[in-house]
Image (tube, rainbow, N blue to C red):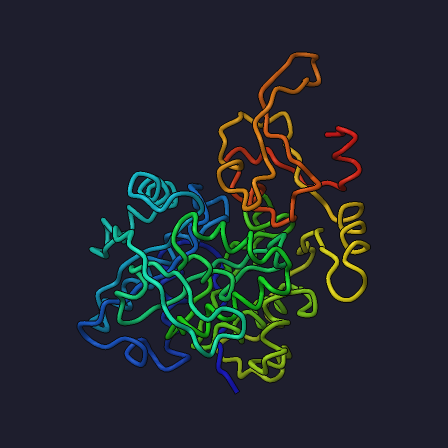
Length: 386
């Protein structure tokens, strides 16, 4: 049975987080079990885009700081890194580090920030779907990888956690190509499990203190859960985290892929929980995402028709400032910037989605810095209703 620590932590007060982090790691054998003196340790955090820590979009700096301290005590050399949405270049990533609080953590602890933007291709002969993968050299250059996800809903995968966070080992806009090649949710989930079985993090620590529900991973709402989770098995950790907030494992695509491969039963009862009991957490009203692509059997033309008619599609609202982030990150080039008539009658420049081309990956929705893109039924979007 995989062992997962579940620890109550009511706030991001640094003293409380450090105490909870020590309990969590001690419950699974202590940091010395995962980090040896002199090792370069990548803390692969979730830095989707430049966002303030209290927005609940990214791994909170208090969690990262506490983890850095434990790695340093074990003699490791911590490096904080991720490949966020957008170009994988120093100015862009540096702005993300500053906005998300990672620069401050590095300054206060002496940890490194990753400035290695190289890439390499790794063979994965035992991969189910992906036999080789482009990976950032900031990952391959580490002796140990610790996965540090945020507990959030996800409009495409239903839930983002330990498994989905590892998509960030793929550098920059190369991620867009994987969305384009694998537009179906089941295939994309299989690819995520291939990444996990290739990278094999030694440890996963999840920030579930303030989670995100609803339209995650970036446009949902902060939701207090008050939990830190840790363990060497990221899939088992995702099962515990999803169950804690009441999400149905049957709707979480990466976990279903893991179940198909025999990597988990998907049942929390088959996981050895240490620390605090799930019953100690009072969690009510956690909202799942409202999206759901039709997969499975049946004529492809019928599935496409149903998806276009009933699966929510992205539509830009009046908040759009035509910055072009969505255009540059759309994997199928379904978005253009065009002049449209606003509600007040004026012509304004705004993102316009071709809903016949759109694959409903929702990259535009999660990367929009203005939260200007909403998800609505396709036929509503085509009528121009905002």
